[in-house]
Image (cartoon, rainbow, N blue to C red; front, side):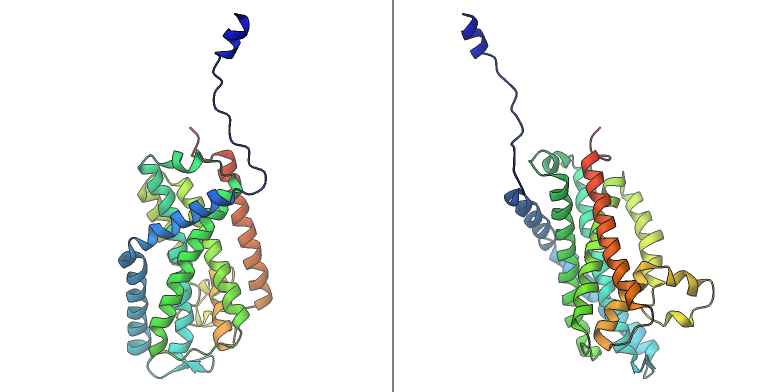
Length: 272
């Protein structure tokens, strides 16, 4: 009888023990992030292209005229910065909106319940955001080519700074999405942090032409080095230090990725 009573005890389900990487779960999360922005392609893909073309129209055709910067046509100087702006903004938007909407819809459990480690959550959301950033950047690049001749002087710089920027902003989007409790918080990050840093980064002008204190501020702006390095990949001229830009990009990818890992590991604003 005693043995039968013990046999009838129902134990709670135990977590599945994965050794190594849960590749199936990681792939599912990544594909989910990709499908999410493709489903609303008019908003996530077409709209940024229209924005890039409008910037080209205003700053190149109406303002730039026939002048040159760094020995190249103004349109050639501006175009890489516009492409990088789309990479930055779309990578940030993808991961931040995904997590914030999951909070509002009560779907955070769908991410936390599957047997995914904090590192796999970080990689899944970050890679999905980076994919959208690179994809939109590539489409924007094709769209602005009729208005600007873009030689590729240093392909490694285009790839390194483009991919690095997408990962950095994807990770920052994760941090913002976990931190924010309402859409006003996300709008504050975008309007008071991301946009000022982007516009004070030399996208449309040489930073050395800025008055103080904006010139000094720009030299401490990480987005300046991302755009400057990305532009160097096309025109072969850099305004800042490439060594600083390469080192800073690697440090930010690792640093922001580690912060995201710790936020998932501790359940920051996820576990209540």
